[in-house]
Length: 446
Image (cartoon, rainbow, N blue to C red; front, side, top):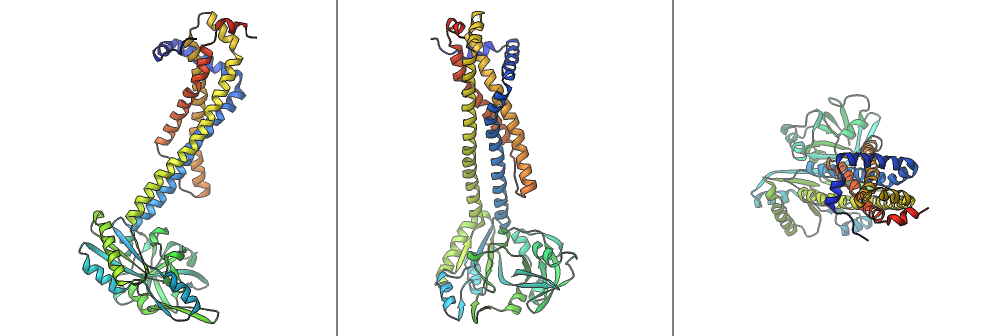
């Protein structure tokens, strides 16, 4: 039995005239068994489609996660107050004031110890109801400073943020988050109107654009205002001057339930430290951690570095793409096996045809090219249909499920190229088997 024709011999067999006749014959042979050809192509279609769609979904999810982290700021370090686990159990059994978390002294020590800090932005978080007539929302009241939107990457949909003077005078002004504005003012424009927070009325001076959970910093209020990132719940936010938060709500926050109460004293629920350059972020975070460990007997704080989270998200994206690609590759492998199976069956069915062609002067390379062309036509057609579906499905997911999907330019190209490669790889063995048939035995085949 002679060897498979060399690549040079195959190239010589692919002259324009011969290739045209071979392709026409391939289409004719596949059209005779069009239902079988269609079913064979489905494996490649689903494989290519799943490659593109799954990568698009993964890319979209990764992009959203990375954008949320970027909004926290690559040069920011976020500090949060955490209620220690031992204090949680004590608070259920006893009625006394628990004191934990970040303090103003911590901020002073950090500012005095680290010269590279550009800005420090303390914040207090109080969970309470906000009212506008009959409309009520369970919100997080964020007491902060005027440059909060700049540091956290937030944008105003309307109005303005409060000023330095309003912060110093503890003015009763507020800015509503998008969710709070929508629920408190379903009909009217909120800017210029007043809302009730606790027992005081605040004039709405601005509305923040829709904000993600990550842009909120991940800290929420537990109890009646104590920050605890472990119990984070996405709630609508309302921003007020830090001076107003200190003056109206104080440092002791109480929660009453079933005849008992819990009281917690937290000076600051979170703080954002901004350094001069990205290169200083990790070293500054390490120093801040050392300072807090020296001054806090309990682990009642968390140090969050968005830059590290971003790197972790990028690494997760790479792993996710590899996993999704491997899963989709299995579909392509199954499709390739299906093509090989059908082509082997086709070789058996066309044994007499192969014998006649060989008797009339067809060479081995002609037979090899014939069957390779047919497998490439099958896989190529499946690749084209798969690419079309792979582009449409992410669009439908975005429209109907509200998930962001991103189709990178290389995904359809790679998926289609792999489908063509699958056709060649899985078509080699059937083509070789057909080319190596004994013409005499093939002519005897019934």
